[in-house]
Image (cartoon, rainbow, N blue to C red; front, side):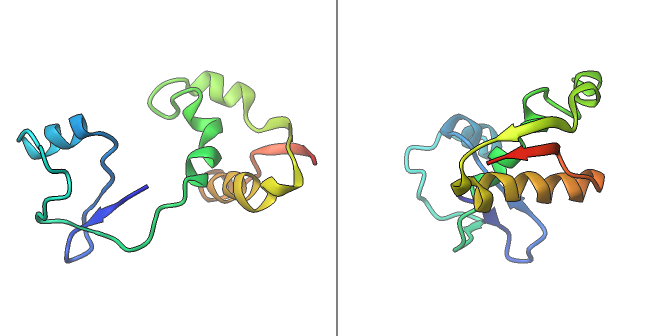
Amino acid sequence: MPLWISDDGHEVVCVGSIEELKQLSGVSVDDIHHKGLLRRIPEVFDFWFESGSMPYAQVHYPIDGRRTFTDTFPADFIAEGIDQTRGWFYTLLVISTTLFDQPPFKNLIV
């Protein structure tokens, strides 16, 4: 996931589509690789972050879905292959403990 950051590091932008880029810039963009005020950071934002955001994104929390979220969080269990420990499980735990100081699931089946 490409991120763009201002020279002073205070603004970070992740553009998800050409339409979003058009809305942000106010111009129709034919060449999405044209240099501008922001530069792309050399790192790539880990897509596992999106997977780790699943408990919140699935109910559109915190914008709405608060009651659904509180009724289902943390999950009773999650199940996945061992290969997911460094991706999905890790990001689930990092995001949940950062936001709520608790794990996002009660039981894990590998």
